Image (cartoon, rainbow, N blue to C red; front, top):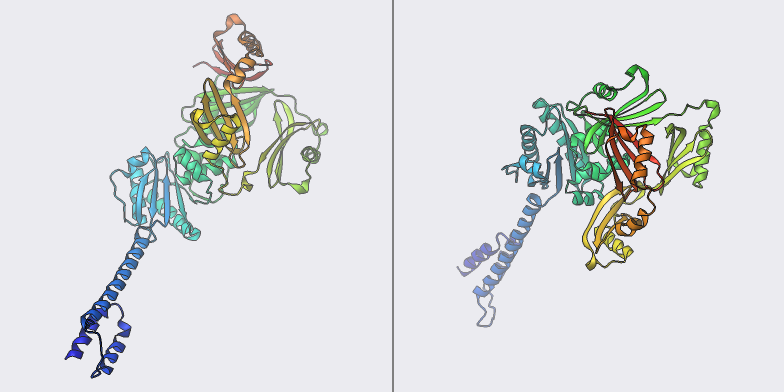
Length: 553
């Protein structure tokens, strides 16, 4: 009876923890049957059972902990992040089962889209369907704005690409089911440099990567200029410029229904002119971005004058008109060959054809001079050289760091940039007021713009984002008094502007003149004979830098 009772208790104690050794324990008990074992009086059968029970309880606790850890890893640990950008920005984090851990708005419009929706623990496709439905319902996705950016971020690149493709097809299907022909832009986040851009401008990592790549492909734009644009506007600019951005898949075409047609823009540009469309040559019309709006940039020649006119793509208003006198074109016999221009450009920077890649050229006209625009790059720099097509003279040569060769994640950071700027200015951090540091693109390279004040002096220092070198430094108080003595003065600036426009002082109305001390330019505006004039005059040498005319409304 005692042996059966012992067997039963042992089996109960270890049945869950160690089932594989139960039989051997029972056999050992059978072998000991009838054997007298001398033990201390205080050592009892109950204490042995308590030890076994404690071991079993500890083992069960370990199993419970392991089970909870596995449950957390599978259900609550973030495995990937999906961002959806239209103008609303929404970020969804997913677990390994592709169920939602969290959905959060990245801006006020995103908060409107999420509303009171609780998407936690829902399947990814269910959550995306709900968000797209809300975007449609609230009018953010429609026939006039049909673009959406899907960005996926995670460690497993292949799986992230699969999620991107799945969501792209799903979103396209949802839009078609709702009568919208969508333009779906999708990407896997690969540019870690975009993280600081996203942090600086409070946008999604995906939108930051798209804008960063766009600016690198089209240096005329800056990151700061584009962060406020909607995804449809960014898509329109990308398609208009014919850009193919790395790691970006695009299906469908961005909607242009919110804009006037190129023909309507040209009609607006020619209104009030003394010539017609039949009189113009070398017509080029492109959608561009200017002063926060989408515009048509219209260029053409009329007689001996070259025109560049910007027309608001939404309202058809003429925003700006610029003209430049064309010099007579030179014949083939009067200009040097492309090969000779190339040799002169390379020799100017001390390189040979074997040292460079991606060498391109085009025959162009700069300020009325026919010239070769030659571009090439090395592993370290990008070059842009202008060669006079008649004389072979180097008119302009620019060299910038090749950012594509900069390893990812190598920006020095805002704290280090601020430290370098203060050290350059010889100012202690405690003495600097209104201190700010902003990452932006300066002349084709990423840089930190650090600004602060010390007493009456304002500092603006530009620090290279990669190597920390000081690219530019200005102090407003230091320059103001010294430069004032060198300026030609507002009266002379106005006289030069009126003379350039062929307008007398008596005929000019609403004449104004403002000095921009930072750029050392006088901005002069006036009206005459139902025309509005705007000119810029160099404050030091009196050169006319810009001349624009526009018909009064």
